[in-house]
Image (cartoon, rainbow, N blue to C red; front, side, top):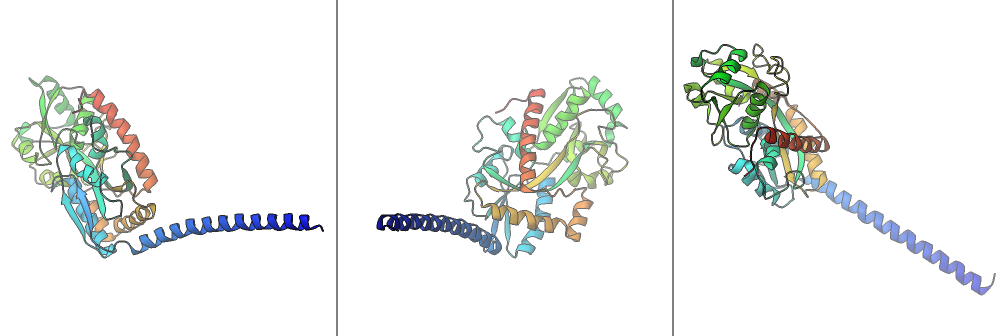
Length: 339
């Protein structure tokens, strides 16, 4: 072998070794990042977690969230500090989380109102689909169409007939413009074909007005309206779920009464800021699934007619995007103008 051939072969070998070393270093760096992230999720949380609820205290979503986060806190061995930050259809609290550090120590616990906001506000301070990492829905709960027993209306057919002939139309209450209770009522109103005047309240404190008959009707989550229904202060004419609610087995659904596209169940879910490491998202998803399977929590949620809806983060994210589109179409059909 000539000295030139030997030099060439040595050079080729050196290049090959250099490439191998480069690739190995790259692999180890990537693996190190993955291991570091995995280790971070195993150690998390090392301090209290802040959970923002852009929801009024005492609402169905608030009750459900507190029950689940209490169980999660016990499992994780850290406090979860809950802060109600209502206002502007939930967008104030949501914006706080969208801008928070994505370190796993700020959570958003929100209801279906989250996917209505893009249809109600022209200049949101965040992107609902892009600025949050969907973790998991905690559960879904149907709403009941409730009236005062003093109205003397016995069933849903009589209600619709009366609504179509009432001078000036019926009035209906909600937890605010763009809330789930607002759009659930609009779904049914459009399907049944009667006019109605919206009376928005701040949060879920409208039940006394329905009981007194000062407002004609409302869609109220069963989780919060059930005590008044059972005690005869409210009369449930229908439920919004595709199937009858277990807590109100004798109350028909609006679908079975012939009102197409009138069904909707409110969900409550957890979110992180968008750039939170996926390992933390998956870790919280797993811990929440464990919490929802705890017999005591499962039974408590069942007593409120809350159905746990464990999904993967990917499945929940897909649901978010579908409902943003669906609610935009409903808002347009209802003639709701964004602010």
